[in-house]
Amino acid sequence: MPFSRIALHQGKSAEYLQRLSDTLHRALVETFGVPQADKFQAIDQYRPGELIYDRDYLGGPRSIDFVLFYITCGRPRDTATKQRFYRRLASLLQEDLQLRPEDVMVVIVTSQRDEWSFSAGRASMIESQA
Image (tube, rainbow, N blue to C red; front, top):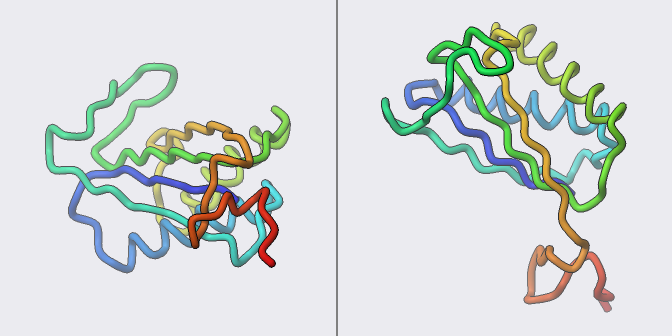
């Protein structure tokens, strides 16, 4: 049940954005145990000067194609699972979009099950749907 925000600079085509979304979801399904139908994402596009990042800190060099994936999930994953996800996402993005691994940053945070309401004002992960 992850919710993902994808941050990048403006200017990419609708097709690029769709492929970016699909590639992220594929990596989550393959490595994180996310169900195929569990896809909730927001893509945030920034004008020059609005997406601030160091070009070399703990990686890089980063380019104007830098993409930040901020993933909130309700179930913690172990370190090995996260590492598999990071590698798979970077690999798929390089294959599918020619996005350099140096331009991919991922932040994962976890939340409690009662912090999700998918609809109808219910704490969807803990309340009965009856």
